[in-house]
Length: 271
Ligand SMILES: [Ca+2]
Ligand SMILES: [Ca+2]
Ligand SMILES: [Ca+2]
Ligand SMILES: [Ca+2]
Image (tube, rainbow, N blue to C red; front, side):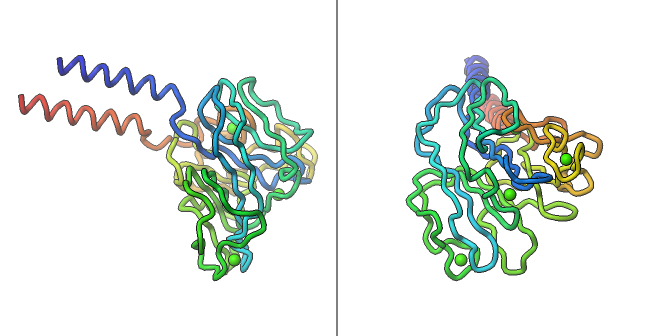
């Protein structure tokens, strides 16, 4: 009986794992080589579903402007495809998304995502307004929080001494400010620095021109310390993230399995 319950739980976990349980920021590119025409943010959520109450916020981090909502994109009503990926970028994008990816075009990604200190928030219940500063005393904490639920967040700083981030997931790299960053494949931890790899992009092909896909390669000499040297890590707009760049954190399913095994063991010892 115990064994049957245990394996039923395993089956349930496997079923749940095959579905995306969370809605997460998955990949970001703000500062490509050349003109910033086709910046992008990738979101990973449930496959084949209609999004309800989901907002992507870009929060200013520079100096006294820190805490200002630079942009707010309402994704409610978006229908996802078979892979649960949403690629937000600008019209005329040079990427080739996977067939299961939904592309949302917004002119914000034609050069308006900032290359300095920035935080991205994925939230529900957004009640704020764009261009409003929610951190008037610039202490890195919102005076009033313009949303009801934080689903995920990530950000970085360009080193300004009074700059602020509004996330626990602040990324850094060996030199410079990230051009882009991606969530480690299979890691579904929200608001977590170690779930991301950040870096500058290699300006291959024509210098100072954004060549796709060549310029999507991460420059390992200007990257976060968790990158695996020689891995060939690259951004993958509209497709599953690069795998093999770093060992994923212990996933939620492994932790749950460990807990279940421990519970099963304890019950068996008692009976
Ligand atoms: Ca930019
Ligand atoms: Ca402020
Ligand atoms: Ca180039
Ligand atoms: Ca990707």
